[in-house]
Image (cartoon, rainbow, N blue to C red; front, side):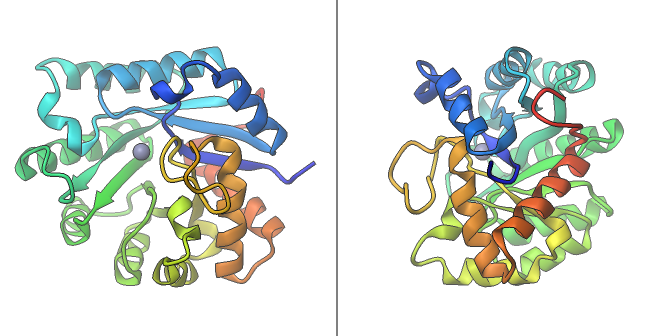
Length: 263
Ligand SMILES: [Zn+2]
């Protein structure tokens, strides 16, 4: 039996899983993935995440409005997100939130407004925050610093440089790597792995997006997190077993996940 792993970020409500999610989750279990966090990007997908976590005991939900979707949020959507985060027992974190300058889908000041709301909600509920950052590293670090550490949470699918990782670590955050770290041209990102201490590392798939090598180009799914873990272990200079053990322990502690698949 492979050593346990936790996929800390997946979009299992995605249409691409609509016909075969039970089989996808069986493959994850067979691959040793004991838990997967399924995450919302707006109110409907946050509700879907909570519904999925109610159906499958190995899932936990994360609820929030992703920066590229803040313009579409209706007037009461944020209140509904807060209510879900406060009341649904399967919700283990707030997100995904953050800032994104790559896609020009929402005014930046509105992104900042929602990022601040997620930070405050997470702190008020003593839940970690899941942070999305794309080509906005300086802005994310600026906002996190002005909010003040320590901040419990994770920089998800990290793609920044070592200085950004260090700044986030200093604020108390974890750093999670996704399939991108396995790509041939990702030497710089594999260098960043080295600056993240073993007790702050997490792994994720960000399914269904960006599947890792050697399944790159396929629909991504939680079972594939093992490929990313193997690559991160190599970059970090530790055994895969050690990496699995550390990241699973970190994920359980950060997200308050108890026990094994049924726990
Ligand atoms: Zn995501």
